[in-house]
Image (cartoon, rainbow, N blue to C red; front, side):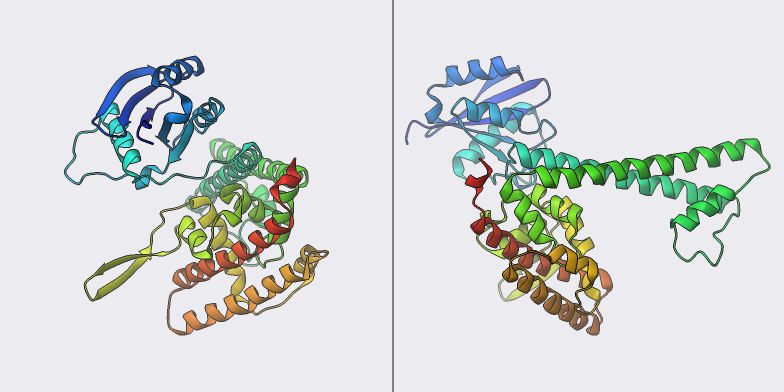
Length: 375
């Protein structure tokens, strides 16, 4: 349509900078306005009929509140990936006005890449699994602080305690005593923090399990089916679904691999083609849990009691996919390791292929349990 207006918004917590690109013509800035619902409604009325507006803004810390408000007003809106916004190599001036104009201009040209916007159920589950991820990071820091404190004062773990941070290891730390009252206070404080974070993680794990049981039917079915894969338990399955949304929105498994940032970078010119490290241009949370799951495929194919329990009652077709994944990914691990690749490279390659099986299971279940069943 010749009368479509392309609107770029530079969004901050308190303000919005607005730029408009007409279908034909220059880009102009409309100025700065408060980031408030009533101000957004006035802007939409000023710009014209909602069906003639195309609005975009970069994904960021303000979330998707503005997106849902614009959709509610009947305006088409895209939230775009900041890392994929085209930037001129020689441009050294950055202002909010220029950012808004650049978005409007690139949006009109079709050069922006929209991100997936989660619905209410996916966003709630995503916030929950990310809260657990933050707690795990806090736990690692707390353990490092305590471990380094003991090391500085020559208190080493006894040789018979093979596994760090096992229950026996923590019990041994509780028996450590210092002559100095100050050092004893520090030890008690560090140990209390380790215990506190452990309780926090336990509560979040329970909340995730409860959220899985109360999720819409399609989400619940996909999370249940993904656990047929080796290395994918409840928390990992919930993270995958929360971060990706509908797996069938990807028409090919390679698209999901690209979304995770696990595909190799490439530099090709003329007859030369060179592959580099993975792009990491994608969802880091998805990439982390897939790499963690990929370590399970170092071992030969087997279905032991925990995995057998997770597969109980599932469609035989899903179990067949999971078994094929075990055989293929273990063989892939062995092949790459035999070529002398280091473990991190091998596991990254295995994780990339694991995403293909995750995609296959997800789209199979989403065909069987349509999203309409969530109503």
